[in-house]
Length: 115
Image (tube, rainbow, N blue to C red; front, side, top):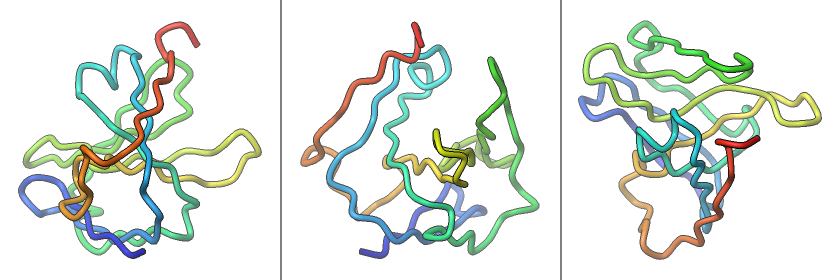
């Protein structure tokens, strides 16, 4: 299914081909502060439609994940990284996809605090 997502001010918009029936909730210092719910997809299933020039990157800890947020509104609607096999991956912030019913998702807890 194709989903459209964005930051709050709509400066950063994107489309993703994904079956989103579950999401990951990580308890690391970054994800827990932002309240992120993440769904992971291959990078070739993601298309940034607008706002590349409005993205600011933040990396922390091992610096493997490019946490990208809108310079205007501050919302992180997606991140870029690699999976354990080294494949380019996108982490969608499911809270930034209006057509996804968060209440219907299976939420998988991840202990990023102790990872």
